[in-house]
Amino acid sequence: MQDIEIARNAKLKNINEIADRLKIDEEYLEQYGKYKAKISLNYYEKIKDNKDGKLILVTAINPTPLGEGKTTTSIGLTDAFNKLNKKAILALREPSLGPVFGIKGGATGGGYSQVAPMEDINLHFTGDIHAITTANNLLSAIIDNHIWQGNELKIEKVTWKRCLDLNDRALRKVQISLSGERNMLPREDGFDITVASEIMAILCLAKDMKDLKRRLGNIIIGYNKQNNPITCKDLKAEGSLAVILKDAINPNLVQTLENNPVLIHGGPFANIAHGCNSVIATNMALKMGDYVITEAGFGADLGAEKFLDIKCRLLNKKPNAVVIVATLRALKYHGGVSKEECTKENVEALKVGIQNLLRHIENVKKYGVTPIVAINKFSNDTEKEIETLKQTLEGIVEVSLLENWEKGGEGGIELAKAILRTLENKESHYKPLYTYEDTTIEEKIETIATKIYGADKVVYTAAAARQKKRLTELGYGHLPICMAKNQYSLSDDPKKLGRPEGFDITIREIYVNAGAGFLVALTGDVMTMPGLPKKPAAEGIDVNDDGVITGLF
Image 1: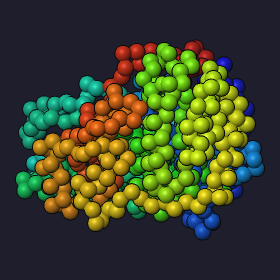
Image 2 (image 1 turned 90 degrees about the vertical axis):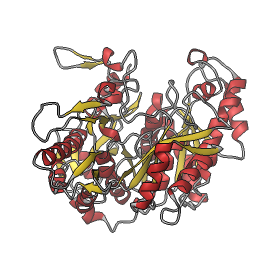
Image 3 (image 1 turned 180 degrees about the horizontal axis):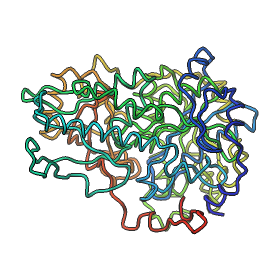
Image 4 (image 1 turned 180 degrees about the vertical axis):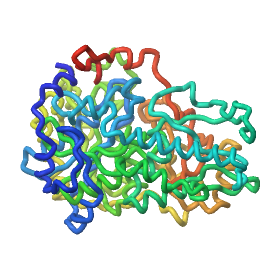
């Protein structure tokens, strides 16, 4: 059966039953139908003194067109822990409509390791992303109205962009204010995809409503004639934005196909944002479960780096273990084999591709955390290839084979036991890769580029060099760096697979997300508004007269 058919045939429990398992009182639950609910922020106040559970991060090698199964692994691992009678909760990001209708498809797992209701989660869910889109564009409307009404703040340059939760390359650059009305001077604007927007980052990094409003107020919307920043607070807009986000800030409760609890909240892209679910949902999960499995987007060079260097400091928690997901076919792809040939045995290509995995293992260890490698097993994996992988990694890292796509939680028990052994025998000595306050923007970028990506050096365009200097002058040099880089390669060139060497990282632009609390460094050709592929997933998605959806994956 296809994923959507498996999900549709699952026996889901009413969300109240899932909440009861977590001892969430009805007063803290806002139901969205039978199988979805929001948990009130007030509930955290009730449980905040509970002991924290163990935090387990799931990341991966650099992704390939073949898929690695990071979300599927996270779900299967949660089910496996519960099969072992461990109180485990899953904390995930929510999918974006852009990838759903683009090249990636949905993000609710696969096979018998899925979160449900699959269709709802992949489409509109509880409306969080729509709320973020609306809040973002309300701020744009307030900015343009302020200018039209006389521009009291003397806004000279608007840097704030509009956003949309779709891949629409035609909106990357647009001309606005073409009506000819007074004070409406035409100017260039643009759209980001919602999941790359600063408000998405803010929602996911805020600790509570007070912190959310503070961060919204700190958003820089543009600059005056003296090139000094103008903020959302200057426009007195932060309260209105917070009102739009008042429900979106509450985490969403759903379940796996095996009826285990899942918190899904927030969905920033990892190649152009920080790639982690919300601080609020993760903190709440840590107070409700003995083990919390969470995921960071794309490879460990992107999502995991941002999780470990940005999110963990805001959580004030250390990860206890890290799972790195790979497949043999994806490793062969990194070894230079075409997508069509990856299902055939090729030990030599595998040996080359393993170098990508080794780099991610080394990187995780730099943070003082023990990694475990999880290999999603496919029927065409050969014993010779499996043995080659195990021999290569012997003495470096523990390796577990996964079959949870086919078997659900049962197929993830080997991995769950490996993690339990690690938690028992290997204490986490987590420390971030760099410090914020006593390092320059240049030093932080160089640390990530050389120590995580393996670059020789960092090259700045003339524009990026000017921006770096000005942001330091404005007092933002102490902020962490959110690197925006293609996900396919450790380098800024998506064609350099495996473990590239002898390359430079080019920084073409640096800007501040003062509300989110980080600097964004754009590398290579990465876009904040992706486009659709030649044959988008949207072409294969349909709904019949009875409302049954097909083609969603």
